[in-house]
Image (cartoon, rainbow, N blue to C red):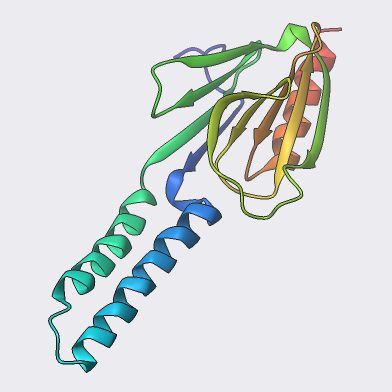
Length: 164
């Protein structure tokens, strides 16, 4: 790859790190273990609940390695690539008029989303509290959740200033 094709910024976000999903899986696993304990105390067979609890924990561990979003910033564009879709989202840096760092949501637990069009905004999120809001020439806002918001904001502001 030439220097022009190398990403200036790259971040990978994995599904297993989403707080809401992890909380759901672990609570379901704890429920299965509690029912298993209750059934064994009553003298009944609760092996199915024990294996379901183990399966929830194994699933949580596997999801730590499942890629959800890959954010790549190049000199002229941003590429957002997701595992669950064959579509890549490409945003031209020439069209960006505003870049700002914000809190992703007032809620601390959010569902992971990729290319979700809701209330006039396009959202990309896996986990974390912060995001970078990008607005293009046409007024379309993009909200990109990131684990390194300061670095992404700094790079995007630097790349969009050069274009002026």
